[in-house]
Amino acid sequence: MNKFFALIAALILLPLTANAIEYKEGTHYEIVKQTATATPEVMEFFSFYCPHCLQFEPLMNTLKDHLPKNVKIKKNHVDFLGREMGPEITKAFAASQLLQVEDKVTDIIFDQIQKQRKAITSEKDILAIFKTAGISEKEAKGALESFPVNGLASQMKRNTETFRISGVPTIIVNGKYKVNTGSISSTAEFIDLVDFLTQKKD
Image (cartoon, rainbow, N blue to C red; front, side):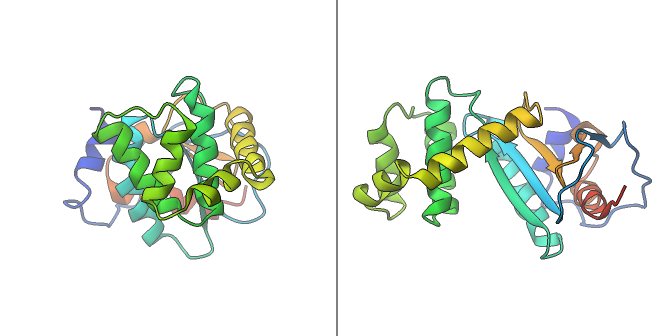
Protein backbone atom coordinates (compact mmCIF):
# COMPACT_ATOMS: atom_id res chain seq x y z
CA MET A 1 0.00 0.00 0.00
CA ASN A 2 1.53 3.32 -1.04
CA LYS A 3 1.52 6.54 0.94
CA PHE A 4 -1.73 7.78 -0.57
CA PHE A 5 -3.76 4.69 0.18
CA ALA A 6 -2.31 4.52 3.67
CA LEU A 7 -4.08 7.81 4.38
CA ILE A 8 -7.42 6.25 3.42
CA ALA A 9 -6.99 3.62 6.10
CA ALA A 10 -6.35 6.40 8.63
CA LEU A 11 -9.38 8.54 7.74
CA ILE A 12 -11.04 8.44 11.14
CA LEU A 13 -7.77 8.96 12.97
CA LEU A 14 -6.55 12.11 11.28
CA PRO A 15 -7.75 15.59 12.30
CA LEU A 16 -9.29 17.50 9.41
CA THR A 17 -6.85 20.39 9.62
CA ALA A 18 -4.01 20.97 7.19
CA ASN A 19 -0.76 22.84 7.58
CA ALA A 20 -0.34 25.78 5.22
CA ILE A 21 1.15 24.40 2.01
CA GLU A 22 2.09 26.17 -1.19
CA TYR A 23 0.62 23.83 -3.79
CA LYS A 24 2.72 23.65 -6.93
CA GLU A 25 2.10 22.52 -10.49
CA GLY A 26 4.14 19.43 -11.26
CA THR A 27 4.29 18.44 -7.60
CA HIS A 28 0.75 18.49 -6.24
CA TYR A 29 -1.20 18.74 -9.49
CA GLU A 30 -0.84 18.74 -13.27
CA ILE A 31 -2.58 20.87 -15.88
CA VAL A 32 -4.29 18.47 -18.29
CA LYS A 33 -6.43 20.98 -20.19
CA GLN A 34 -6.01 24.69 -20.82
CA THR A 35 -9.63 25.73 -20.30
CA ALA A 36 -11.41 25.19 -16.99
CA THR A 37 -15.11 24.49 -16.54
CA ALA A 38 -17.43 27.46 -16.08
CA THR A 39 -18.37 26.30 -12.56
CA PRO A 40 -16.22 24.46 -9.99
CA GLU A 41 -16.41 20.67 -10.11
CA VAL A 42 -14.58 17.56 -9.00
CA MET A 43 -14.69 14.51 -11.27
CA GLU A 44 -13.67 11.13 -9.91
CA PHE A 45 -12.76 8.51 -12.49
CA PHE A 46 -13.33 5.05 -11.03
CA SER A 47 -14.22 1.45 -11.76
CA PHE A 48 -16.18 -1.10 -9.77
CA TYR A 49 -13.44 -3.54 -10.77
CA CYS A 50 -10.81 -1.47 -8.94
CA PRO A 51 -10.25 -2.40 -5.26
CA HIS A 52 -8.55 0.94 -4.57
CA CYS A 53 -11.70 2.71 -5.81
CA LEU A 54 -13.71 0.98 -3.09
CA GLN A 55 -11.14 2.11 -0.51
CA PHE A 56 -11.42 5.60 -1.99
CA GLU A 57 -15.18 5.90 -1.33
CA PRO A 58 -14.91 7.10 2.32
CA LEU A 59 -12.38 9.75 1.30
CA MET A 60 -14.67 11.08 -1.43
CA ASN A 61 -17.59 11.15 1.02
CA THR A 62 -15.46 13.14 3.46
CA LEU A 63 -14.45 15.49 0.65
CA LYS A 64 -18.11 16.01 -0.28
CA ASP A 65 -18.93 17.02 3.29
CA HIS A 66 -16.15 19.63 3.43
CA LEU A 67 -16.33 21.34 0.04
CA PRO A 68 -18.56 24.37 -0.57
CA LYS A 69 -22.07 23.48 -1.75
CA ASN A 70 -21.51 25.12 -5.14
CA VAL A 71 -18.82 22.56 -6.05
CA LYS A 72 -20.32 19.70 -8.04
CA ILE A 73 -18.87 16.23 -7.45
CA LYS A 74 -19.23 13.85 -10.39
CA LYS A 75 -18.37 10.18 -10.74
CA ASN A 76 -17.21 8.82 -14.09
CA HIS A 77 -17.05 5.04 -14.53
CA VAL A 78 -14.34 3.83 -16.94
CA ASP A 79 -14.73 1.03 -19.50
CA PHE A 80 -11.18 -0.29 -19.64
CA LEU A 81 -11.51 -2.63 -16.65
CA GLY A 82 -13.90 -5.57 -16.52
CA ARG A 83 -13.28 -6.73 -20.09
CA GLU A 84 -16.52 -7.01 -22.07
CA MET A 85 -18.60 -6.13 -18.99
CA GLY A 86 -16.81 -2.80 -18.48
CA PRO A 87 -19.10 -0.87 -20.86
CA GLU A 88 -22.17 -2.71 -19.53
CA ILE A 89 -21.37 -1.74 -15.95
CA THR A 90 -20.85 1.86 -17.11
CA LYS A 91 -24.38 1.77 -18.56
CA ALA A 92 -25.69 0.29 -15.33
CA PHE A 93 -24.05 3.10 -13.36
CA ALA A 94 -25.52 5.69 -15.76
CA ALA A 95 -28.96 4.08 -15.34
CA SER A 96 -28.61 4.25 -11.56
CA GLN A 97 -28.04 8.00 -11.87
CA LEU A 98 -31.08 8.42 -14.11
CA LEU A 99 -33.24 6.38 -11.72
CA GLN A 100 -31.83 8.26 -8.70
CA VAL A 101 -30.54 5.12 -6.95
CA GLU A 102 -26.84 5.79 -7.54
CA ASP A 103 -25.77 5.33 -3.91
CA LYS A 104 -27.68 2.06 -3.50
CA VAL A 105 -26.46 0.56 -6.77
CA THR A 106 -22.89 1.69 -6.11
CA ASP A 107 -22.87 -0.08 -2.74
CA ILE A 108 -24.41 -3.25 -4.19
CA ILE A 109 -22.02 -3.51 -7.15
CA PHE A 110 -18.92 -2.80 -5.07
CA ASP A 111 -20.07 -5.37 -2.51
CA GLN A 112 -20.74 -8.01 -5.14
CA ILE A 113 -17.51 -7.55 -7.12
CA GLN A 114 -15.00 -6.58 -4.44
CA LYS A 115 -16.30 -8.26 -1.27
CA GLN A 116 -18.30 -11.28 -2.41
CA ARG A 117 -16.00 -11.84 -5.41
CA LYS A 118 -19.10 -12.64 -7.41
CA ALA A 119 -18.84 -11.90 -11.12
CA ILE A 120 -21.42 -9.88 -13.03
CA THR A 121 -21.69 -11.59 -16.40
CA SER A 122 -25.01 -10.69 -17.98
CA GLU A 123 -27.96 -8.30 -18.19
CA LYS A 124 -29.80 -10.71 -15.87
CA ASP A 125 -27.19 -10.06 -13.17
CA ILE A 126 -27.48 -6.31 -13.68
CA LEU A 127 -31.29 -6.40 -13.47
CA ALA A 128 -30.99 -8.38 -10.23
CA ILE A 129 -28.82 -5.59 -8.80
CA PHE A 130 -31.47 -3.01 -9.64
CA LYS A 131 -34.14 -5.24 -8.07
CA THR A 132 -32.11 -5.28 -4.84
CA ALA A 133 -32.00 -1.48 -5.06
CA GLY A 134 -35.80 -1.37 -5.29
CA ILE A 135 -36.18 -0.92 -9.06
CA SER A 136 -38.45 -3.27 -11.03
CA GLU A 137 -37.03 -5.28 -13.92
CA LYS A 138 -39.26 -3.40 -16.38
CA GLU A 139 -38.14 0.01 -15.14
CA ALA A 140 -34.47 -0.97 -15.01
CA LYS A 141 -34.52 -2.51 -18.48
CA GLY A 142 -36.25 0.56 -19.87
CA ALA A 143 -33.60 2.82 -18.35
CA LEU A 144 -30.71 0.66 -19.61
CA GLU A 145 -32.07 0.83 -23.16
CA SER A 146 -32.95 4.53 -23.02
CA PHE A 147 -31.36 7.34 -25.02
CA PRO A 148 -30.41 9.37 -21.89
CA VAL A 149 -28.51 6.42 -20.36
CA ASN A 150 -26.70 5.64 -23.59
CA GLY A 151 -25.83 9.32 -23.82
CA LEU A 152 -24.49 9.39 -20.25
CA ALA A 153 -22.43 6.25 -20.84
CA SER A 154 -21.01 7.70 -24.07
CA GLN A 155 -20.10 10.91 -22.24
CA MET A 156 -18.24 8.92 -19.59
CA LYS A 157 -16.27 7.17 -22.31
CA ARG A 158 -15.48 10.51 -23.98
CA ASN A 159 -14.36 11.99 -20.64
CA THR A 160 -12.03 9.02 -20.10
CA GLU A 161 -10.51 9.57 -23.54
CA THR A 162 -10.37 13.37 -23.27
CA PHE A 163 -8.40 13.28 -20.01
CA ARG A 164 -6.37 10.23 -21.10
CA ILE A 165 -7.29 8.31 -17.99
CA SER A 166 -5.27 5.10 -17.76
CA GLY A 167 -5.54 4.33 -14.05
CA VAL A 168 -8.13 4.77 -11.33
CA PRO A 169 -9.03 6.37 -9.02
CA THR A 170 -8.10 9.66 -10.67
CA ILE A 171 -9.37 13.11 -9.67
CA ILE A 172 -9.80 15.94 -12.18
CA VAL A 173 -10.72 19.36 -10.77
CA ASN A 174 -12.52 22.01 -12.84
CA GLY A 175 -11.83 19.98 -15.96
CA LYS A 176 -8.27 21.29 -15.91
CA TYR A 177 -6.23 20.02 -12.96
CA LYS A 178 -5.27 16.44 -12.23
CA VAL A 179 -4.54 15.77 -8.55
CA ASN A 180 -1.17 14.13 -7.95
CA THR A 181 -2.29 11.70 -5.26
CA GLY A 182 1.29 10.64 -4.55
CA SER A 183 1.97 14.10 -3.12
CA ILE A 184 -0.71 13.79 -0.44
CA SER A 185 0.21 12.93 3.14
CA SER A 186 -3.15 13.26 4.94
CA THR A 187 -6.91 13.43 4.43
CA ALA A 188 -6.88 17.11 5.41
CA GLU A 189 -4.21 17.81 2.81
CA PHE A 190 -6.26 16.08 0.12
CA ILE A 191 -9.35 18.16 0.95
CA ASP A 192 -7.31 21.36 1.14
CA LEU A 193 -5.62 20.69 -2.21
CA VAL A 194 -8.90 19.94 -3.98
CA ASP A 195 -10.50 23.03 -2.43
CA PHE A 196 -7.53 25.13 -3.57
CA LEU A 197 -7.86 23.82 -7.14
CA THR A 198 -11.62 24.45 -7.28
CA GLN A 199 -10.90 28.12 -6.54
CA LYS A 200 -7.89 28.48 -8.80
CA LYS A 201 -8.45 31.05 -11.56
CA ASP A 202 -5.38 30.78 -13.83
